[in-house]
Amino acid sequence: MIHTSAFQPPWWARNSHIQTIFAKYLHRQRISHKRERLELPDGDFVDLAWGLPEQGTQKPLVVLFHGLEGSIESHYIQGMMAAIHQQGWQAVLMHFRGCSGEPNRFLTSYHSGATEDPHYLLTLLRQRYPERPIAAIGYSLGGNMLINYLAKHSRTPLCAAAVVSAPLQLSACADRINLGLSRCYQGYLLKGMKENWQQKLRRHPQLSGFSELNSITSLREFDDKITAPVHGFSSAQDYYQSCSGLPMLEKISTQTLIIHAADDPFMDDTVIPDASDIPPAITYELSRGGGHLGFIQGSPWRPHFWLNPRITQWLVQQWPPYLKDKDQ
Image (cartoon, rainbow, N blue to C red; front, side, top):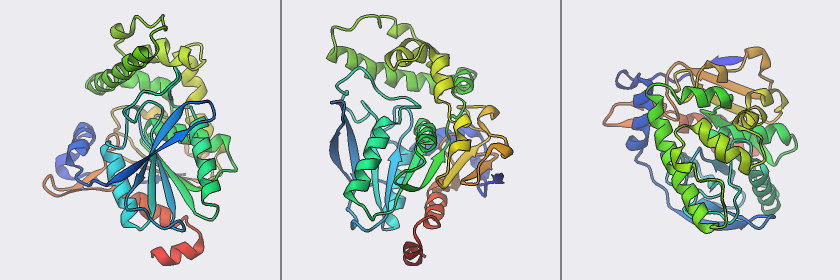
């Protein structure tokens, strides 16, 4: 079933590009954090960012997964972490490999279907906190990754998950972001991806075969020449078919909230599932407006962000009964 979202854009932010672009600049919430370097089984690492002040170890723990080229500095991460701490819960962000400001050690990085590092982290968190309720939130690429993770791991430490603005049909999204004004977002993302890859090449001077990096002009081309061969796919299309989250939805049994705006300028309607394909565990909310990771309400002078209270409100309903009573 597809539910009509309660989100309604204000008069000044009905345009999807205003929602998408202004969200970055209108977010004012900031939260302090501490870093933890998590050494991985293969010898690489990821950096965690724990929200401060730290909450008690019996409080719910919410793990965040950012979008393409995101980090602790991303506006949507800062806003959500602040909202989580306002609830008295603990927030922690897992930076994907190479996204914390320091290149990772190995050539392999991250992509929309790379679930191994999140799986290792969530398993470790359950070992550290055997009684603590744990939920996860994934944004954009991180949301598609989280869908893949939930489909692969029916027995997960998570009691709930939320996914926002996820490109569940990767091939169609690569085509959509290469059209019209959306090419501006593509150029912005590509710039960061190329810079990070240049840092990686400086760390691995023996590498060859990536001399065409500067000539790449689209995300599909980047995935065809970089992402796919580095991560064992035969082509960008092979990567897209293997890692798109849409076909994975039917396998999910963890209680999951999916939020999507029909006017998201990063993707088209092919990312929206048929109502008959949505399993009982998934609550799918679709709004007409909201852009990509936008969902701004209020006035330009006093904006507020609908996503954060909507997700925390939903999570309250998923916690164990004894926690619900305390949070209400």
